[in-house]
Length: 485
Image 1 (cartoon, rainbow, N blue to C red):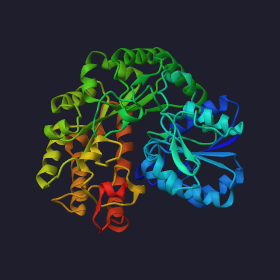
Image 2 (cartoon, rainbow, N blue to C red):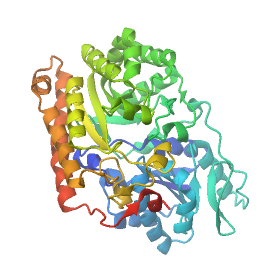
Image 3 (tube, rainbow, N blue to C red):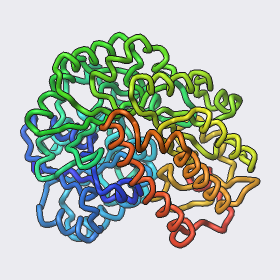
């Protein structure tokens, strides 16, 4: 079959401001197995070009595919855009099969099928095996799809979901379709060729606001040597220099993680690696953090989330202030940058809470910070805690962690964003932070910090402009549970 995989244009501020883009790993991951199964597959990365919907629709119709597959890493905020694209395509092409997938569709399959008659199938969960089974069945004109696990569709006009598909036991069984990147100049970290990659899937920690442990079900990792070999291939054949690890927590298994680091160090490739990791795992791995540096890691994102130990316990973060601080100090000792992410909205913050948050971030002394907003998803335990609360933003396209969603009791939304912006600018402009920005002993890290600072400055002004002049907050009383039906 002729298949067109589509990465829809997204509203994410970060992806627009940097003028740099990373390839859609999830879509490449289903593209590889489809190519290996003998299908003609192409990638239309509309997010890369920031195409308008009219342009995306025109390109789809022009290519005349048998099936289109749509998905985005920001699946919640991208879903309305996917709905619009598929509606317009259906008006002009009644035969093309429309298939979507991702985290949001996996949990909202019923509502999507009820509200979007143009969407034919939804892949629920990990898509590599499910999509091959579905496309094979469609190619063979099979009418009974009930035996395909992990699939949602309409059965006699009623939304129906088959048995849940099992997790993929061996992540090395399915090849990533890197060749689909042809024609796209994916860059990151200052116009360097870059890709997104995964050592593992899932997370063993039960943080209530995060759906990683629910969607992936079980933490698994790739073969250490296999991933190191693949990175070497991408470096030598595609010129990739920067690898952004999409893992929620790649180091959950310290033995396997160390094996990977050693395998990569042995190749002596001089790469740049960035990713996310738990602070307590950095502390745990103190004795071999030198391998992190030798492998090429330049920055880790650390989820600090909150200053209040009570809140951290309630959301089951399983972290401590002391380990957070120690992790940042250890990373600095090994010349690895730390980015502390902090989430606003887990509690009913008052002005003093924002002051305490600022004090905590200053005491941590991270190299970079990123403030986000609590964004509840229906499939997470955190949703049950806040479902009776009102929301201030009903535009699902902006449920991207960079816009306030939950209405706060003591502060107006304009006060919240001003406190957030004040914390960001004052923490980043501290003398210590500026000294590292201009005089860090390692030139590569100075370059990395300048790159991030330049983007951050533009995003800082853009978010204020968007809030006060573009974003429309709802004036109606809308409860979280009613918004998600």
